[in-house]
Length: 220
Image 1 (cartoon, rainbow, N blue to C red):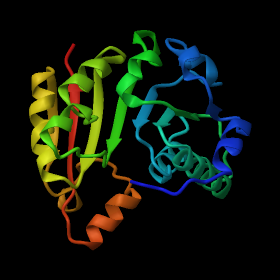
Image 2: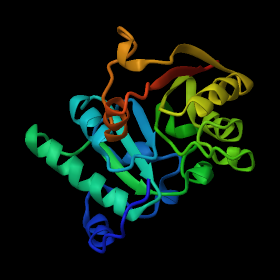
Image 3: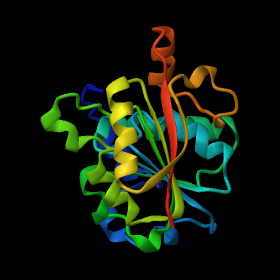
Image 4: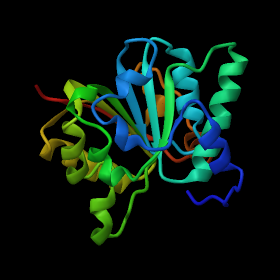
């Protein structure tokens, strides 16, 4: 998603207590940032942050890290998180934001970080064949995630793109993940997961585009 430059985003992020400006410093020690010892989940490509804001405020027993590459997106995510926690009268103490290129994620997350779950929501489908390796679910990326995912760690993935979803099923299998659940129509799937709709998801539903989803588990 393209978004206009927001001059306020970078100053606000740098002043925020839950934004990390140099994430490389926390590889293998993200747990030191959170006041409570808890499972560690991450979102790759958090966008405007509505998903992670709603998820984190409802699950204060889990620590979250949300990653994106665009300052404007992260600035909006920061504001959305602040608004949601204020509405729920909760302290922001179980979530951090950071800016980083997900293709190089191995530089900021390591085995000692013990990530138990990754969320990937409506990532760029990179439809042209020569760009497939840029997909966040491509085999090349999945191999990187395996380095910091715990045994039986999970990846929750949603997309509107049929081709990306079909190819991703192959990518997960090639990387040795077990696909626990999959659906080509999440909206009409009963008890698939406790779904939180993203802005993209609401838009696609209005356009009568079905949402594809899966849960993949890392083998021991």
